[in-house]
Figure 1 (cartoon, one colour):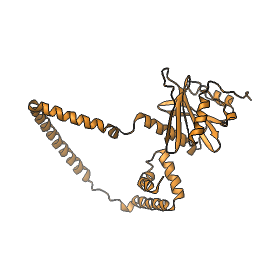
Figure 2 (cartoon, rainbow, N blue to C red):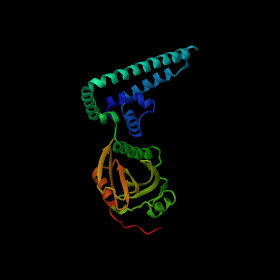
Figure 3 (cartoon, helix red, strand yellow):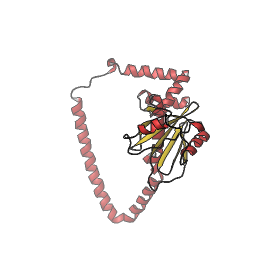
Figure 4 (spheres, rainbow, N blue to C red):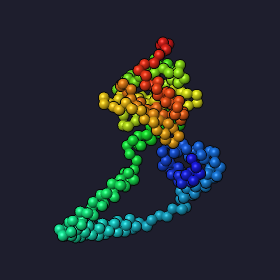
Length: 268
């Protein structure tokens, strides 16, 4: 995160309005940049001063009545203006319907061109942010796993009765991706299994839930806020893998997930 972006987001950071990923990026930048940390401390001081009782002014008792009265008058005026506008438009339409039709076509075209801006991020982008946030939140809250074990025969039974499906728990320690454990998570308005693997100093969250019967078996790759994401479906599971591990090694991990079966260790 650059200093310019940090300054723009300081107020939102102070008010706890940032998402998990940006909040983490801000905290890391403030720990390493004395200039931005000083600006943050100054804004904290201003915020504290504004919250002191000496700066508050008690409004007069009659102020609420005056405000409500003004709002009612404005609402009545707006209603009269709206009624007059509709009456005028109705009369004008009867004579100028061709011109109005052309004008509406232009309005619709302009609205369509600007629709992505007006509607904000789409469902796919929102879900990507949700996956990254779940990954980061598990690391920030020191809640990486609900069941901590490198044994798939311990982790897999733990999910029984907690999810409406039985997630596969592949053992990939021999390939350099040892199992850390598992936990319950929630993505896209559904409960999912989160399997946690390790690669050197990097954690990998593997989210799993049942794949739809007509699901797309293609693999997609994304990068958001420095985290790599790979998604796809196996024969019966939809998976999302997310980590700050480099894309090449994360792809190696996913290729193991896609295999029908992996050699497993004998139960302890």
